[in-house]
Amino acid sequence: MDLGLAGRTCVVTGASRGIGRDVAERLCAEGASVLLVARGEDELAGAARAAAERG
Image 1: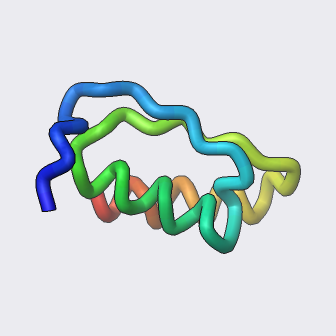
Image 2: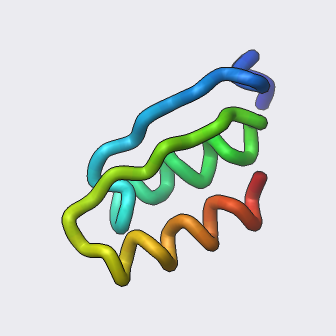
Image 3: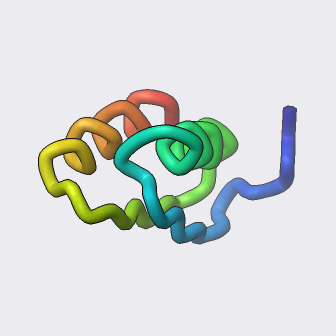
């Protein structure tokens, strides 16, 4: 699905797990630059790696 987000910048809060993580991964897959925000640094690092692999 092309949402026209290529080249856009998005901020996702709660990005280390659950819905936030899924949204971040999908935005990366759409070509957006994504800033991930969460409280848990270790989980966030894993989420960032997973999102980068999708985009």
